[in-house]
Amino acid sequence: MHVNNHCIYIDSSGVRITAAQMETLVNDLRRSFQTGKTMPYKWRVAQLEGILRLMNEREKEIMEALWSDLAKPRTEAYLHEISLSKAGCKFALKELKNWMKPEKVPSLIATFSSTAQIVPEPLGVVLVISAWNYPFALIIDPLIGAVAAGNAVVLKPSEVAPSTSAFFAKFLPHYVDTSCIQVVEGGVTETTELLEQKWDKIFYTGSGTVGRIVMAAAAKHLTPVALELGGKCPVVFDSDVNLKVAVKRMAIGKWGCNNGQACIAPDYIITTKSFAPKLVDAFKETLKEFYGEDPLESADLSRIVSSNHFRRLTDFLDEENIPEKIVHGGGRDEKHLKIAPTVLLDVPHDSLIMKDEIFGPLLPIITVEKLEDCFELINSRPKPLAAYLFSKNKRLEEEFVQKVFAGGILINDVALHVANPHLPFGGVGESGTGAYHGKFSFDTFSHKKAVLSRGYATEMRIRARYPPYTHHKQIILRRVIDGSFIALFLGLFGLHRD
Image (cartoon, rainbow, N blue to C red; front, side, top):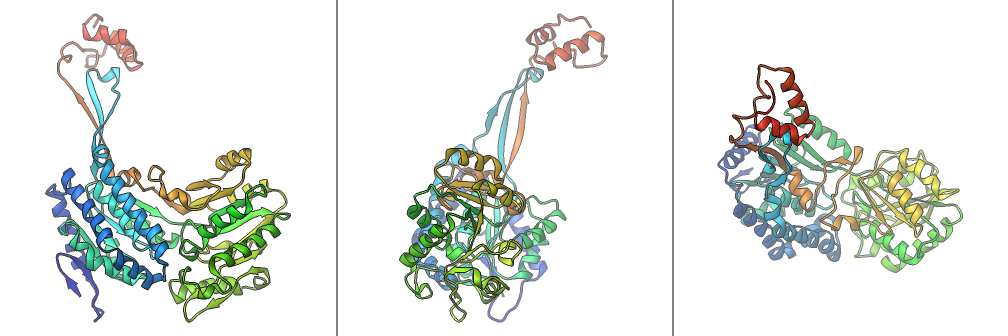
């Protein structure tokens, strides 16, 4: 094990970090934070510029790590991880000065004369625990928000993506201030020890199961958390769409997003019985166009991240009565951890594939008699991270936005809403709590401090506030509280009777 001013990690001998060493790390960061080092605008900009340089100068190494961990196609790696993270960093650099400014708010007659403002301040020392499916972006994006807000940060990359984790441990320290930003590698033991520490915020991306563990650990210290989880993201498909375009968008949003291993990937489709055959045929044509006759040989599909996840997905397919529901795909290659894009039609509602989040290249289609039946089906399940509708019907669109409860909604496309820095990205209910991206990242890692400032000039004239309380003072105070300028005038100039 190595412990230095750059990072803490497990070496080839398998020696693990002790709880005492973890506590020392956090205490050192807290001392750095308490010096005020992270507060100035210049420090924050320097860290953001360093992160941007990392992405510009180490793009090759990032792509190699993502290929090693997930066989992620270079185009996907750039579009979904590097380019979005670059854009987020540039956006923060452009807007940071405005984000840091105190926000002036109205004062009240009752506090005349005074000024009121909301001052954003950093929370302190924060912990970011990342997921394996987008192992680069899901570290960088929260890091941007944390340092923009002026915090000291510990980053815990996912051990399920070891090459990307090693990338951060090796390269990030050369681009940021290591007295305030640290990387900790490791597995469950290290994460558990991190969660035992006192943090000022924990930002976790991953499964609901681990999210509950994180929240329970945070509760011991009353630590606030942001949980970016997932869920079964539904897609409602109307028959009035441009079918070829809609299916292409669906396919790239499902299989072109890490082969379905994405929290916002479509989990199942709802459409009418009459339209389903056309939809299935369109998927067959599009998937053949995208990935060829044998998608298991395609270099444009990511592999399944691990043998455990491979077995989990094949268990979905091998459950009783499920194989007969496969209308396209179903191929698998356990040696290379590949599963072909697979479409299923009318699987049982109580099957595993409809109970659990799929997080892979399997896509069930559920049929209903009329499309409006989708609302009851969607809302009978936990609130998803995202919900999608393909339709030209504006009335249906309005009804979808109003009736479907989800972290975010996108009409006539899939996943693109995450690219807009002006929109919050986050879940609701079991799909998560809190949001980030753009200013929402800054806000997630900030405390909004209320500041009210009063002068002394009017103090000698306003006696109604103080004992002894008389009937007339009560009348003046009630009217001032209700916003009466006349009562304020009387109070200021002593024209009321004591």
